[in-house]
Image 1 (cartoon, rainbow over the protein chains, first blue to last red):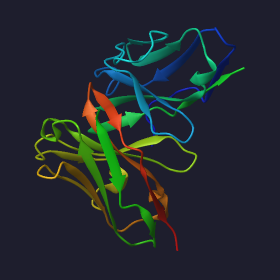
Image 2 (image 1 turned 30 degrees about the horizontal axis):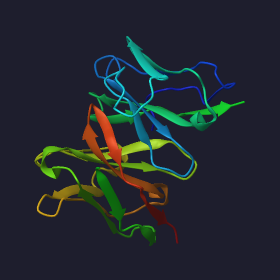
Image 3 (image 1 turned 90 degrees about the vertical axis):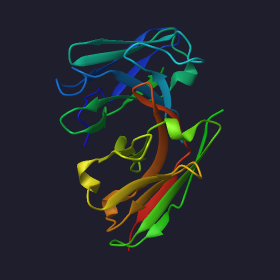
Image 4 (image 1 turned 120 degrees about the vertical axis):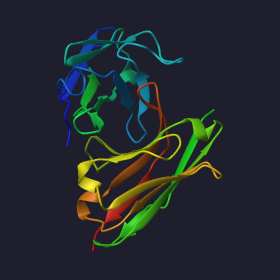
Length: 110
Length: 117
């Protein structure tokens, strides 16, 4: 079961900025760091953001993350057609003693 | 670069067993925790289990506790998931992932498990 809530979909035109929210609780996002993943159709997920707002090497600076309280967000600026994918947030949950993922957001480039 | 290759998936009847493997290469396996994450067809990601870098600590999602066992063979840089008493709801693509940076920094390509009579 998903404990982190994301909007099911988001969209924008090429060049626009899209933001995806991730809502959690005091046992996960409230006290642990958030990571974000992108999953292209038919492929394995890939790490986009770690430690709330850090990009691994190779991830374009068009992707940025933030966290406030029990919520986090991912922003994609300069939207490109190859950004069409599913995006997931994740965090460790101290109450469940395990990781929890968000419900996932499908980004569409119009 | 980091490589994770899963194997062992297939079709199994309800109540049956499967053992998944994940062969790791191009990194020091013994210094990382390892995870299994699954994705049911058309659904989102679900974390399944973690084993600590030294194999001493293991945690599972509630839905698999008592049925699944995660383990590692450091001499072969291989991660395992023993799955018993399989249910149709266990049908999913199973990914192994390296634990790092507070999450999962490398993923395999996945192995498909189908539980059906």
